[in-house]
Figure (tube, rainbow, N blue to C red):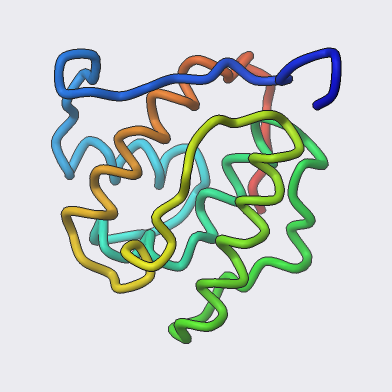
Length: 133
């Protein structure tokens, strides 16, 4: 972001710094914020939820009309994560997204990323109302 620095608060999650929520609590948080119906952490592998969260935190940082919400195609997951990476860059998020691992839909990779993202969200959310629909 040039001279002014990042627009976001960067966070670095470690087991010591993360308030380890259960997978159930994490899904409840995602579904509650975004009014979605995810039933498994693995379903976050499309990247769409993270794009919505970035729009919630930093309005206009992601073009939601380009996000593929109802997809099960890996190349569309990749496209969603490219949009997420671009929004990270735009607001100065210092985080490498392990796209190749996330899109495989394995629990552990997706759970670790959503744990980091929850910490990032909590550090940056200002409480403003967001209508995800």
